[in-house]
Length: 156
Image 1 (cartoon, rainbow, N blue to C red):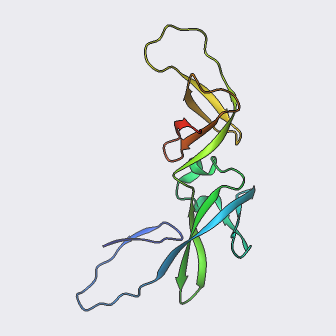
Image 2 (image 1 turned 30 degrees about the vertical axis):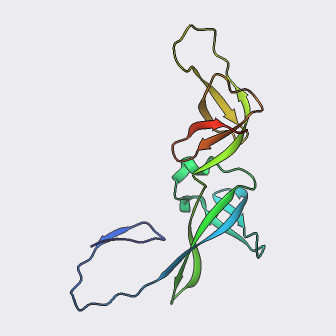
Image 3 (image 1 turned 180 degrees about the vertical axis):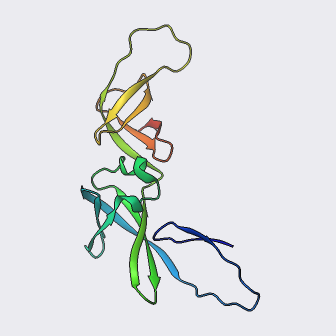
């Protein structure tokens, strides 16, 4: 069986006999809100208890690309691992699958007679850039698929 350590992401191969027993650990998700980032540490707030935790950006399930999409007050799901040795501790976090962002600026394209949808580069308020259809303008709210970094639709 190939096993992966949740905290360090290292993988190992283990063989088990039919009589071997394994300890079951508890992994639970809790809702948090993104506050700010200092250096490589991301600060999150539990909205029920107002407890603030900090986690390294490397603990993000989407990697550095997802970390660049963080925005103030964004809802974050934090996974907590409970072990007998260390108790309850946060191990990973993930961003929502899609989220609404404000377009800060767009690079207008020169007039072209193109068939189909014409795309242009837009910069979001968090500094991220992505391709959007030509009808998206500065100040528009758009919904972005964070995993693929693609425009989905305009927010109504």
